[in-house]
Figure 1 (cartoon, rainbow, N blue to C red):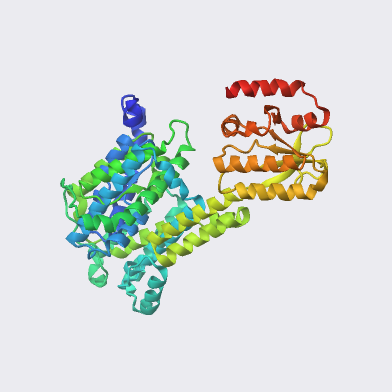
Figure 2 (spheres, rainbow, N blue to C red):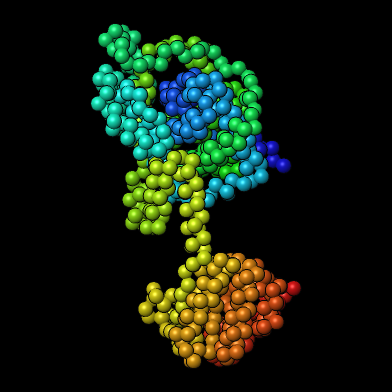
Length: 575
């Protein structure tokens, strides 16, 4: 067992060089400057006191630096997971209450445990059932929901909080004219400043700038803005160790939300990690190791008052752009957050909540992916509607049901595509030994007495009837002239008992009609399944060929030279 694979920090820390520290130091400080105001803002989304957003930036980052396979992914609180937490926990306790906090921490332990188990047993592939269109539709819908939920802080109106867009929009429509002028002005100006600085240079700490401006404005001109809601007291000090309170009934209620967070968190981390991986050649993301790292981060984090965490799109990109080379950047970021918790939290007393709302709204609306929708509309209409269905399902039914809609539709599309794969007849390219799709190459020669049939998928119970129906339909078009069927099996990579039995039945059927059945390009494992299933009791081993043209030539000329050699070869391979 390679211990460095299990604990990746052992790969880079012993060989750590001084020339790497400058980049890691700058990146760690830069990320922490963005992370601190974001952490406070995201905790408010989750319905928790602001301090808990900073707790999420401690142990999860340390654990990921030790166990994560990416050296640049930034872990901590994120907007999407925060809203999912609020959605699940708000039905069980009053936001901000002690009970609410303990349930959110328990949720982190559950999420971490599930992620860790999936990683240990190499079950990360399960999450692949969420296709890219589903992820795009889901994240875009959640971003819109998060943004609209922040209008209560942006405008200073106590709008209802919900993960269903029609509920939010209806309440905003009814109460929009009650907006607080001072609160709205500060929030809109903050959004404008953030957008302008982001266009100038994404490395500019725009969140920190509006936070400082907001604090200064309220501290020195607070009398003029007494109606603007501020953060007020944020406790100082590091989180104390404590085991989350267990309640079996709560665990049952939290399980759907926990599974949602597992999938969303893992997908976010993998997609971010892969995008960063593509920009360098020093390391490769290991999906199951990422699950282990995320799981341990959430488990240990829950022991130190953290709610569920995952990787951040924006902070990871900034981490990489700022020069981070190793996990040391994350450790620097942790030190900066610790300094803030110990000494600097009183500075955030006068921070307006509308400024935090502005930071969140600008950040999450950037996740609404119009480009992907436009691309899918042109490239794949089925994937486009899959994305739209997930988007609308998440908007109108809520985040939890949005995931269910996405996974369900992904499975339906998968089943549809595997049960109805592409099939075609092949024709001979003139003056060559190649056979190509007659629907794409008009010049190919199609012979009345020969049907070359290609099936582009594994052959199993879900598509065996589709195979048979298409084969029979093409054979029927040939009529009584048909004397040879050649199955081009190069694209068939797997076959089950149902598929083999269907083939045996079709071979017998066409044998009675005086039609010979040949196989071409059968892969070794598939050929083994054929032979074990008794197909050689119906046809001889000399009915198998390496290429379609060899099968047709053998039928026409009876040239046994190459075929006897190949038959002997596959016979020996099977034995």
